[in-house]
Image (cartoon, rainbow, N blue to C red; front, top):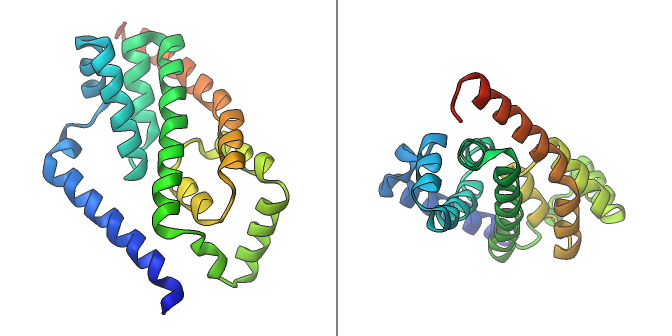
Length: 186
């Protein structure tokens, strides 16, 4: 039971953060329109709020496309993409540190053959594994949690994140810009 204590603390922490998020009313108001309005009202405070909400949202499993759509609708595909890339990298890093601080490398205590095989692949090719995961899953919180709990070094985590995020973010930016144009939202 001692081996699973860190996982218990992690689940408890996430439950408390989710309860605070729900209690504060942010969950009801969080949408692409809300982010658009915040960015339109004041660029600098809107960007600070955008980054803070992206970080909190990533920790709480809120899909990143909501944040990206709000940024593209407000700032356009180029600056919306730049803002999203910066927020996504910061969000992934903060999630890594929070989850690692509470859960440590908790996945290393699991002795399932599939888990051992995946961790071995991650240990032997960390940057390419993480960058591939970023291309396929972007900032998916579950991926962030697993990587943080896997024991992977932060340097490899950051490098894989920096390499893997630009392509999917650029594609989403093009998609949301196209959507905004056909729906006359610009």
